[in-house]
Image (cartoon, rainbow, N blue to C red; front, side, top):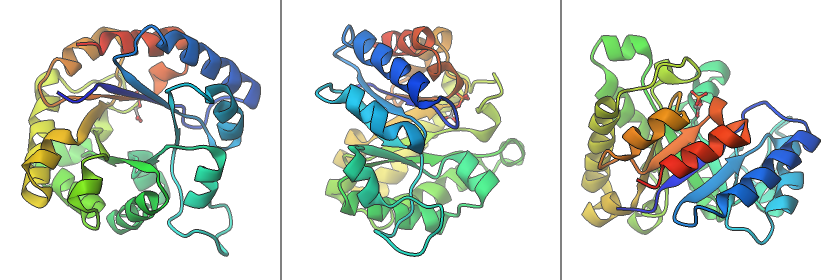
Length: 252
Ligand code: PGA
């Protein structure tokens, strides 16, 4: 199995001082779990401060989104080159909040994924169905369309190092977690898709994280599923104890 990977998505939380304090606590606490890969995704305003804290550590630094162009007249946007300049290693792309609240499309995610790799950033590619899509049996169609676009212009060699995140929209921030069996079913399906498009060995290497109300008390049962390689954590990553509790529980 791939090394477990736990990513904390801080969303629109934390001042610079708060971000620095949380990053120090995560950096120091995660040293106890060297078998787990960890990354944090602070808001843009705190990336520089957190990069400074994480310098010399093995913790990854992710942005929560980016634009695909390297520069230009795109008011309010951030380029992949700027993220690299800040010391980012990863970027979350196609998070459901970006898709549903800010109109990001599959085509946007496809372009951004290509741009991330062109600039040395590991994309964390999010897919997931809404409650209505699940209830009308469209889960597999939706995640297939999203994953297929996200990976369309990525070579097998590159895809092996990418990260997919299955995040059912109905489980994000709602306290409703997918059951381990529900997560496993979609993760196995995603891996099969990757095998078809990029080959079996890529399907084995690519890490597929689960996201949606992951907490210290449900992380262990999720990671115990064969196709769940870790988690993308929202609410529970804002506090050191609960985030490190999830890291600890991800040892399998
Ligand atoms: P949540 O968010 O853990 O608060 O449900 C997960 C996510 O949006 O990545």
